[in-house]
Length: 152
Image 1: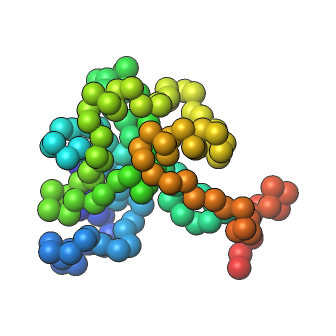
Image 2: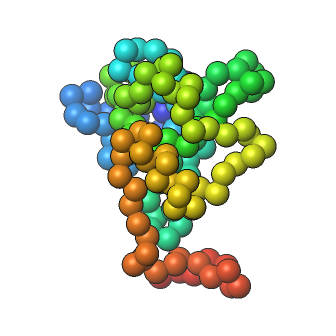
């Protein structure tokens, strides 16, 4: 399913420039369920979740499901957001990873999510996809564990 099909609020209606790099701002909910293909045109799965870094406000990872049937045998992968490219012509995402290589990627089961904030885990993921991790050390936390969200 594409982001245009999931656009219940008309965010993209009449606004997609097919000659440009794609929309600069997109609704997160419209990206869930989007197909992901590799550069060979092979179906790699779809986006199940988008993980936000609450300290920086950045999208850190897209969680990609791959394999299995009707969630049975499905494996999940945290793909660094920078590794995905929006393909506006085909209304999907592209990930430059061979399908066979993705099968050996660091993944996880839907009932055993990793600590995605762990630096060691993050380095392993970014190394696999050839992206650079970003740091959030100098960014003020937008929340407090005691009082909940704060507003700036």
